[in-house]
Image 1 (cartoon, one colour):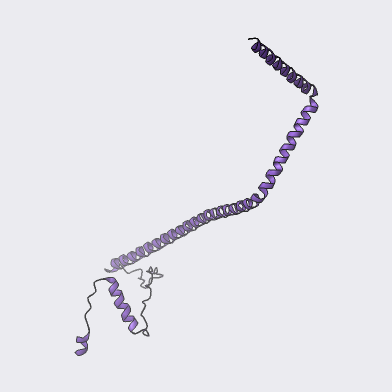
Image 2 (tube, one colour):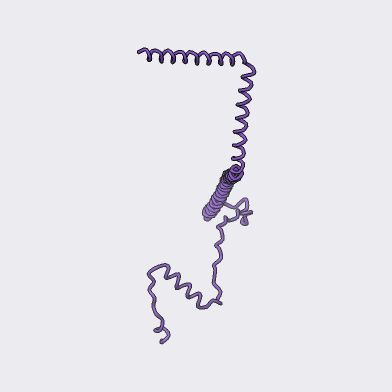
Length: 198
């Protein structure tokens, strides 16, 4: 009697409290084996009757209970056929689902592989660009100087070729410049004389 009165009544308000109580109860005696119920068996159809045990003679008529026997046999046969049809349909749907899942997986894997390759390519390009930048800074100064020298040499060669190809034009240009200079000198002289006269 004293042992019963010592036990406290615990009122559980939440499911988490209930779970905690169950776990505490299990942990009080950890050596005790936990009972795990086995999985319930899948429903199975009854086997079709292979042979009829009660065979009537040719002179026997139908008894009063034969109709009920026939009705029971027919009901069981319909139930068996229904179960088999449902099972076949379920298996077919499962196969379709598995095929669909595998197809989706393949497409996702191909897409992921393409994107992965693209990312790796981009990373490689960035690495190459960084390398080129580092190398380019050193080579840029040298290459710019070389380019400037080449441009100057080309300009000089073009000028030399022009003078070689058209010496008459150069002499005419020189004469034109001389005549222009003479004219400008004459104008300045005449202007100075006019200013003195006035």
